[in-house]
Image (cartoon, rainbow, N blue to C red; front, side):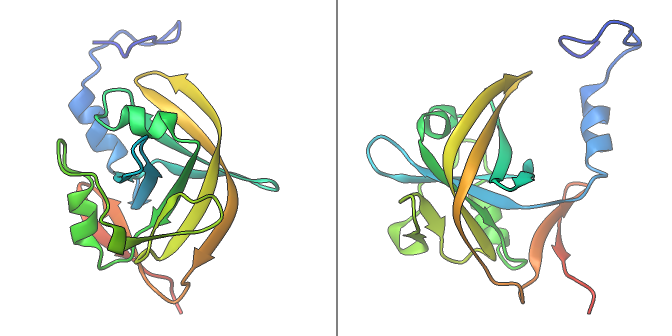
Length: 174
């Protein structure tokens, strides 16, 4: 099977999505939680690993949201959101907010607010408070760009990573 919307000249050899996902699993990433309020004011969280700094000046971030996500409407309708990089010991947070069909509501005692009013995970290693800049459909995902208006960080803490289907600890060399 060829990937949808394959460019001309793409080798029509069978395209195994499972093998493709395993190949991508060889690229280790950090683990982050995106958080936003829904229309009723509840704080929703979802684990992402597609997080990229687009620009330092002005500070712009992007992340990707699957079109099939149960939380698609919450995150595409939000004018503000936060991106929260998880600490190495936040396995339980990562599991809770990455389960399909799981509860995505962040309890009020686990978040605070910064400039935009978006929910910010209190325990995060670093948090980026963002205003929606642009949403762009791309394949089976929506690419979401945000302007960073505030941030906080704890540089002395190790980060949670994900590599080949497993959580790992990301630490800097001294």
